[in-house]
Length: 107
Image (cartoon, rainbow, N blue to C red; front, side):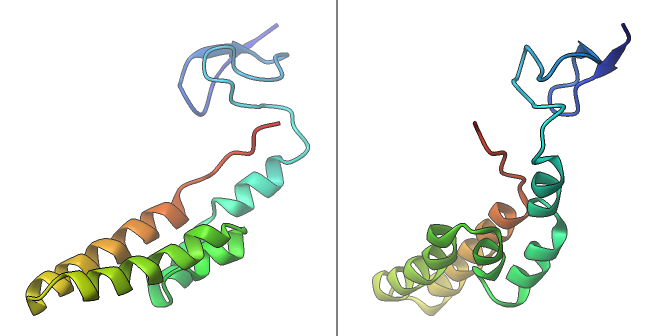
């Protein structure tokens, strides 16, 4: 029995374990390839040019619509053009981070 490092939390775990006992990260699951593809940078690249497109590709429909709803609200709420611009940039950056982040499925 060998010990390997958990890619999520970094603790040593038996190579025969199905998941990390500390953080629950799955090791030997069927959806490993699907999880890797979902967290790939390609959806983030798409969201760089079209906000929400990366979330749409990953199946996160609420995350795909949210940037547009938040942008509309920011334009309606803020009177100053500079504040509108800052709000839109913040929304754009947050949706990029959300797209790039790997979302693990829970069974």
